[in-house]
Image 1 (cartoon, rainbow, N blue to C red):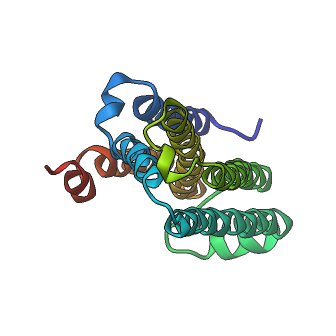
Image 2 (image 1 turned 180 degrees about the horizontal axis):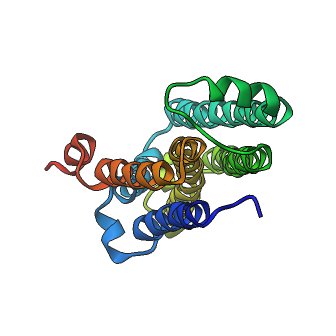
Length: 226
């Protein structure tokens, strides 16, 4: 078996750190105080503001900007997948280079390839999240175009439509955030190529940095300021 006990413990630690952070952010009641949850409230505000506008070019431009950002990360994840597969294809060359580094990384061919496959899997997951988010923003654009005219903004149907668009936009943002989270934890995963103990440390560091950005960052204080 290529995996040693420290490798298995480190991999389990990495998965728990990623899954635990996701659960804390998306399912625990405390998530309502996070930056993502705050921005979801502003999505609803945006949609109700849109109801009062006769000309909605600004709203269309905002949706287009969100789509462009999602498309950028989707294409970036494809490049990352290609890089991970290149590492697998050139294992011997990579191991020869790694053996000369002063940090003294010692690993076998099979273990190195399995680590690289894991990295590729993370980026494949990120690609699917970004791809689905991009599709959802397409749907948001369609619903923005289907918004009732401004003169009907006070009708129950128009308000229900605004909430519907806001919820769909929030779901698109949720999948985008999951894709970005995969990118961040992929950086922590790179620590496994050095040692399993480094993976455990880098996983904790990534989780702490992401938590601070959600709950204790300047951006959160700016959004939450009265």
